[in-house]
Amino acid sequence: MAMAALRREGRRLGPLVSSPSPINAIRSTLAPTEEQVGLGVRSISTQIVRNRMKSVKNIQKITKAMKMVAASKLRAIQVRAENSRGLWQPFTALLGDTPSVSVKKNVIVTISSDKGLCGGINSTSVKISRALYKVNAGPDTETKYVILGEKAKAQLIRDSKKDISLIMTELQKNFLNYTQVSVLADDILKNVEFDALRIVFNKFQSVVSFLPTTATVLSPEIVERESEAGGKIGSLDAYEIEGGETKSEVLQNLAEFQFSCVMFNAVLENACSEQGARMSAMDSSSRNAGDMLDRLTLTYNRTRQASITTELIEIISGASALTG
Image 1 (cartoon, rainbow, N blue to C red):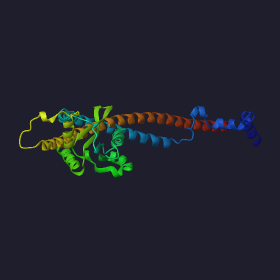
Image 2 (image 1 turned 180 degrees about the vertical axis):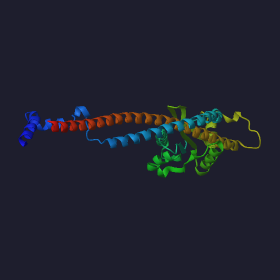
Image 3 (image 1 turned 120 degrees about the horizontal axis):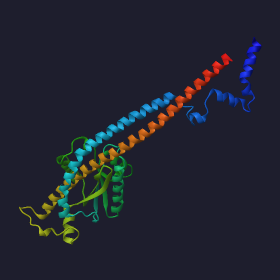
Image 4 (image 1 turned 90 degrees about the vertical axis):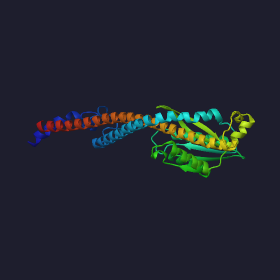
């Protein structure tokens, strides 16, 4: 009886022993080949892949929700930003916008966002601010930073901490209006001395594009100097001054009002550009999560099919051994 069982095992294993590589032949009967399973898939647990798929699905839901929130905020801010453009345009026609004017005291006002996940919009503002600092730097000049927003603060404080005069954050925590921005502008005017304020922000063009912009606000003394020198600023003597105010007082009031109007428009334009950039970034993230989910689904199906195939081969081999 034992000899009969031995002969049956010999007939079953005979083709494997006679093969040139018996070990590989035995392995081929127990597990599928790499061509069937795919490279790097056999060692992956299906539980790990399922957990990864679940996390990617959750991330995709979050990015889609953030895109919808950014879209709703964008529609509200865009109307206000477009309406605010009419505030500073009369000042440009009257006092001009002269970024190339040479002065001794420059203050660069960098406007950024407090939150991230909006592409490279904040890095662009910081790069332009650093470029302006290098252009206006000199032995007889002084250049300082005024930072609005956490993201510009985090980047500029690394290498320009000694040149930062004022930092303001959490601007968009509450609903922005002209009164709030006027208070911010008044704080800046009280805490810094300047001949020229150079405001760096991102002007909104469309959902997928924004234009880095620099607006220049000159002090009353520089405005009067440029007017008398016959520069780009026209002669202010052509205008009549009513009331008991002098020319210097009128220019002082105009400079303060101009700065608050330009600041109001710059903050709204930058907020609008931020929401548009966040929409584009979250849309790209959602598409990338979808592509990753497709790849993980394919990997999961291959791993699961390989496991099922292996179990079937083992069952069939065991049944053949019993019935043989």
